[in-house]
Length: 103
Image (cartoon, rainbow, N blue to C red; front, top):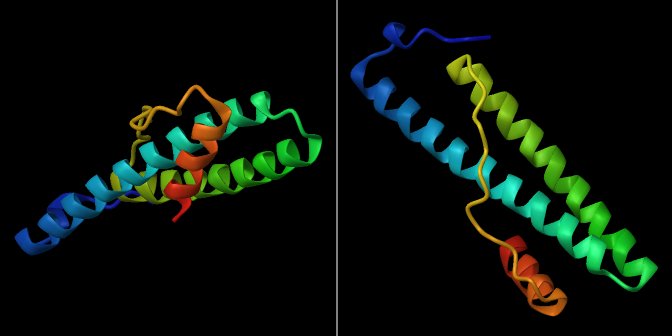
């Protein structure tokens, strides 16, 4: 459902602008994490580690979808995500990066 911004007071407009901005950051963060976990899963040598990484990636996909739906319901448009946090090239550093990101 799309909400017309003209139905809101100036305070509501500022709140919506902030919420929309926060959602854009969240969408970009989840998109970045999805890309990173995909890269890490491809580099994993241990099948069990690869499976765990893929499960975590799937959680990030669900978060991404939820934030995207919220964004659409507020704006009536889709946000084009971008990678804002590049994943380190080395597997170990990538895992550390992902661990810190989850915290």
